[in-house]
Length: 358
Image (cartoon, rainbow, N blue to C red; front, top):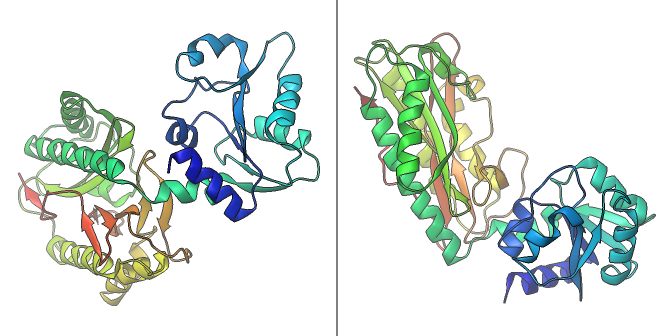
């Protein structure tokens, strides 16, 4: 089945008559491209039989190079209201239930809802989101390629660790490796010393010194898919107590990976990691969920959290990244990207989780 066919089957299964998308990950997954996103309303409307764009005339010529789907164009002088009304009449056929792209601008979403009074509404997570969670072979190959690029970037960054270098300088090493492999840097968290105890530290000009733990959480993107990996480094001997905490976090990773298989709830995987850390006496220092989906976005469903009852399926891809963060001392996070298989899971990285000592 094509992605369009799969979407319409999902729409029928969920009682959804119309899906409204903005330029973003959902649209790119469905069509293979997306128009330029800006303040002008650009909407892709998918009905059970027809589909087309509410398209700013400014962008129509460029987008026409990528698709033969119908356009209902609008000009700045007139606004999108009339084009939207015409498009809904052609595509929506008085929908009873609409799924809105959850990443759509609020003003555009309200415009759609105002044009459809009394319609039942849901978010795209029920339709496109559910489809995107289960990766096909092509997507898994792209994610594997990205994971190996991230391995190379992580290896180069850790090899560059030396006294006097800043966090920013280390992040630049990883950026260069991503670019050498045709990828772009999506994010880089490099935190040395006490900065490693901040899960989302803003990489800056802090200088690496001997005896400091360094958390390195980096990711890149190539061909529309992402990587995400976290490993630990240290310049010289690690700080007191580091080895014990590293072993606990690694055991939590292993426990979560061992819990993954089709039919298991996401919260069960979270609990597997969290129970290890809690039993070791560090539960209060594991302050975030265990993982998040990875694909055409860095963060996407499924979310591996204590509150998520979602049942895992073969082909789902998500991170496993427990951590322990000791304020003023150090933090340790270790991260793998797991693919659910028919009997368990496999990880995409080939880089060991052992501490790198420079």
